[in-house]
Length: 269
Image 1: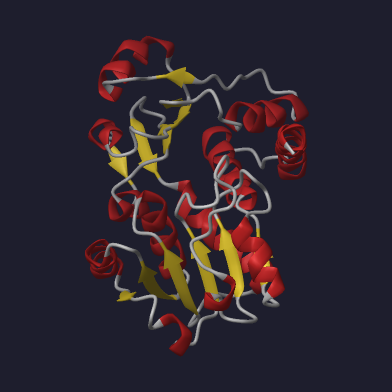
Image 2: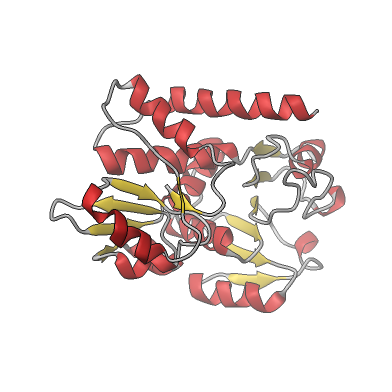
């Protein structure tokens, strides 16, 4: 794993739990890379690392290091996973996109033809937008800065909307990709209760806390809710399989992460 900051990440716990469960002689190690991602990859090339998770702020920079970039990684313009090919070169992809779509379909069925409102227009929003679009969803972008929503809508083949339009639209799914509600600012929410369409599915990509204010308000509106930790576990499970060719022990991975989050959040409450 490469990124900055990385001290808070649960990715080492996620992957090392899988290695331990499967009795694999492998280890997942975090590397704090403060500046040049390409320089880091050059310096560590002799180790022949089999795979890397890539997080903020290096998801765009590592693209130039990839000999192969899949369609999702290219469309999103951000890589969160590097996979060592048989020829020793790197293949880049983005597992966040499919993990988001998987989380939604596991909870609410096929996304085909459904209206998905995405709150935000940053990197996470881009991954979710391309992920649900690949499953046939209609993508609606809602962001406080309208131009950013319009730019992403144009890239993904979606539509930018305003907060005023939201009550008049048929909304099947809402996905929050903004940091609003994340610890320590847990009283924040991207939507107030009356702005949440009753009965839709609400997915918050924030997973600290597990139960955000948005999810609490959505439940009061009779909505089905999905915690952000499901996407985190899903993207890691996809990475594990890409690196090892082995089906990951997803239940054990998820249990370890949930226990860690519940412990930390319990200490804070």
